Image (cartoon, rainbow, N blue to C red; front, top):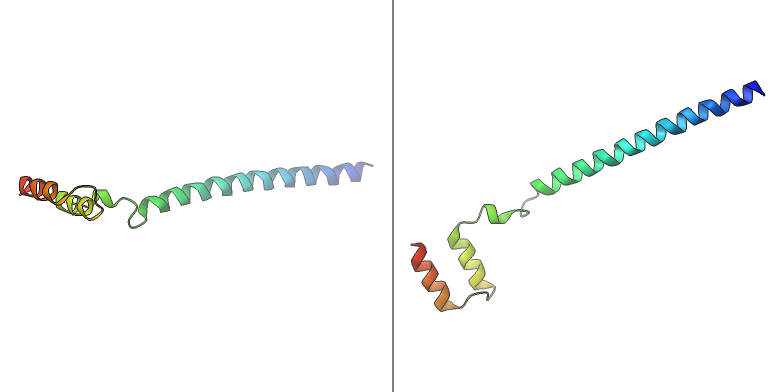
Amino acid sequence: MGGMMGGMGAWMILSGLLIVALIILVVVGIVVLVRHSERRPGASTWQRENPQDVLRRRYATGEIDEEEFQRRLAALS
C-alpha cells in the first residue's frame, strides 16, 4: 500500500507542475499577442497621419463635403 501511495504522490506533484506550466504558457501567450498587436502595421495609423492626410481621408469617405474640405485645407496651409 505504501508503494501505491508514493506513486499517487508523484502523479499529484507532476500534475501540479503541469498546471503551473500551462498557466505560465497562457500568460506568456497573452503578453505576446498584446505586444504583437501593438506593433502591427496599420494598427495605429492615426499616429503617422499628418493633418492633410486625415482631411483627405475624411473627404474620400464622404465624412465632409468638398466645400468643407477646401476650407479646412486652406486653414491648414
